[in-house]
Amino acid sequence: MVALDTDLTGSSAWSYTLQDSEVDGGSVQLPAVSYGNMTVIRSNIHGGETAVQCGEHATFCTVRDSWLHGQRIPQGANWHLGGFLSNGGTNVLIQHNTVVCDAAPTGSDGGCTGDVNLFGDFAPISHVTVDGNYMGASMGLAYCTFGGDVSNKTYPHADHVVYQHNVFQRGSNEKCGDYGPVSNFNVDGPGNQWIDNTWEDGTSVAPAM
Image (cartoon, rainbow, N blue to C red):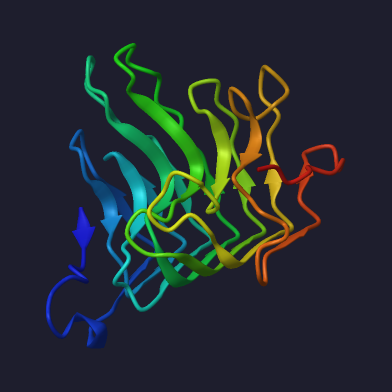
């Protein structure tokens, strides 16, 4: 695993770049790569509960041209998995990646939440761009992406969240996730934009709350 603890005093002045690398997070309830002030480029990230997580105290997170996949969960565990996770934060760029949460459900309420998961648990979701990614389908996840506007979260409203030029795989049920491609994206939120997001055949994917 690779991590920078953005909760530490002075961490806002620290950063790291992970480039042309492979990271295996193993079978632990932690992200393979975390928690921010990071640039990830052309890397193969797998294992762990989440491939990449950006924490609420990070000054920035950039993930480009990478493959986020292969999460692991022990049988009987109730972990919630994902490709990319932000539980709140700002200055996030997720660009030109293939992202999929492809672990099978455990039958104990454990398994994949989505490929790209934005939730305002610990801070507002703000200034996040999700651009030109391929969202892989899986019947084991709920939606392929959650867009940050979730009414039961501590910070329920997202702003300046831009999804553009992403391609969603339909998968065996034609919906990408078990229930659909996207949830909790508010097109009326300040600065939020949903631009040219499509299925593999070029037809439009509509945003949804």
